[in-house]
Image 1 (tube, rainbow, N blue to C red):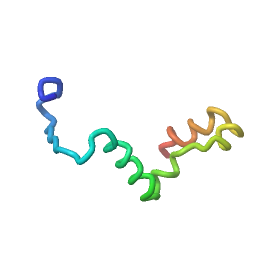
Image 2 (cartoon, one colour):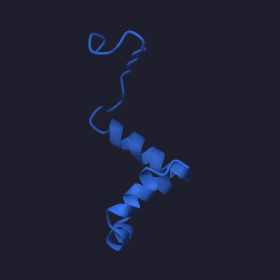
Image 3 (cartoon, rainbow, N blue to C red):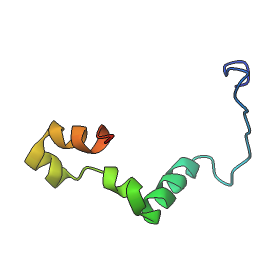
Image 4 (cartoon, one colour):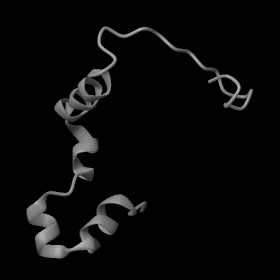
Length: 63
């Protein structure tokens, strides 16, 4: 990994209990924490109502 990354970046790896499910568990923790992150999700109902425009509104609205 070090050979692929620019020297400006620190690379720190640590062992995890179960590498197969680790990413899923981290994602679940983020979702369960709530907050502003959850405001970025698009539900099927929202997409069915607004189409791709809802994605543009939620993902690319910076002001």
